[in-house]
Length: 215
Image (cartoon, rainbow, N blue to C red; front, top):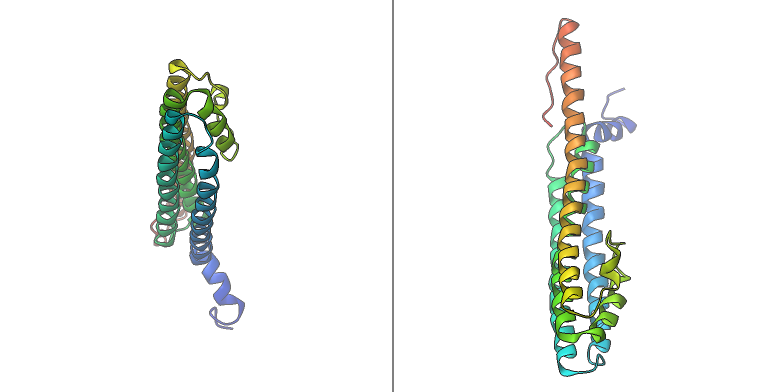
């Protein structure tokens, strides 16, 4: 029976990696849409407590934080959408799933950066302007974020030092997260290179060399 008949075509699609690329690219695009809708809903909901912070500067700080938040949501959506395109454009390779995993790890680190950096800056400025009133607002929002590696970012002092620690902590957390996830991604790439070299060495040792798919 021909290899493209019945389940043969399905198995070829899996072997070529086309199925994985299409599935993961589609999932990421759906995630981007969900993040956009959910983020917009959250952004709208958080406007209510902004005008109840108490004090002119506290309200101004809340508005600044909200403006930064909507930009952050837009950056998150854009990154996920772009990475979906990166996965969809992958060339035919022997290790498609590993390549996809590497891209997903990089995307995770990038998302941590676009979440932590702008929001920590906005929160720090807000703490300087709004003091303790904004800390309630910031802590209320932070429950929606992944657990941060620095506890003081969830309840710093409503002072200049507290705002500074909030900003520095967010930037440091973003950088460390980016390094960590990019390191994992590059380790996967190295594993692919090792596997490819072993394959080539084995083929040479056996006296022949098959055409090698690009990774």
